[in-house]
Length: 406
Image (cartoon, rainbow, N blue to C red; front, side, top):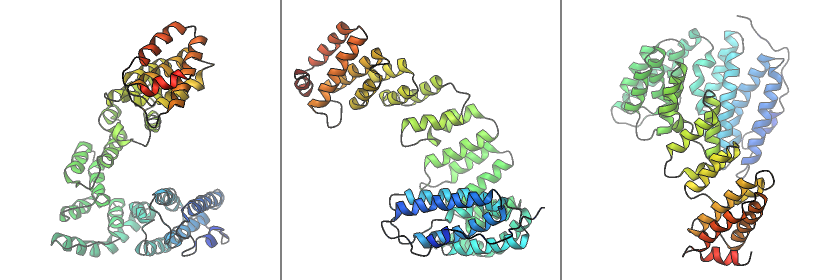
């Protein structure tokens, strides 16, 4: 194997920015910014000095948790940034072609950092330990080094005593990389309640043997109540995709595995992962998965420029009136018929009492947009009929008041 060497030590700018306790209690945003800067710095060096970048990545991961130890990470944003840094740097470290001696020194340093990881910002590094070893020989050596402690831990757990060893995940990862798959299953068989970071290795062993269905059944059967359905779905989807069972992966697990904070983000994640599905078909599938709330997909359909479907969804179930009015305002000049339908639907749902903190201004705005759009679309008469129906609703006090002053 080619040995990459760095001719000179890199004067890392992040070194001074990640001293122990550098960031105060309210320093989350600054810390996140500094993490991004450090990653950019390491990437830049990696383009011309891979070994130097590997050394920088190890140094950064050593310094990360001590520097963040005083920061309020309750929002989760800082933890997400640290996790993303580990996911980027671990493959970089594992891929650098350095000597076994140099790599062993890196691993010793990272192992020490994991033992001192408090708060645990780099604990996910253990999932990559086999990858960091870069080959089965070194991975097997690390597995032998960790196994005695892991077995003692499992023995105590089997006797009902709480026991935890920060190197357990590292051991499973090393055993897997070393090809010692049967030992992975044997260790898991000793653990009465394996947590997900351990259990996943048993499932990976089964999947590596071509037993994908058995692997999925394994996690379903052994995962405890602390493991969310989304986590299991992500594993199952990934393994099915690896073996080309794309239709099954989508039908059974994709919606749950790719759930996000917004419907639009959910759609985009699925569209990227399943490009063979046309936008219209994918959206229809997602709408069908939430038959009681189709209106929540209005904004997604509008963003995709599926205006006929967006119109249908706007009327299908309660849809946020302000979202509808905003869509009408954005399309008043280019698509007046669509803008009219949006505002008519907004007035309709207002009349039925749907909406958050609505006032007379919201009603007047929707009414004005509806009449302007109807005039532009030459559908004033149709619009007035629908507006009249909305005004006739018995519980539409706010709507009547607002429209009366329009």
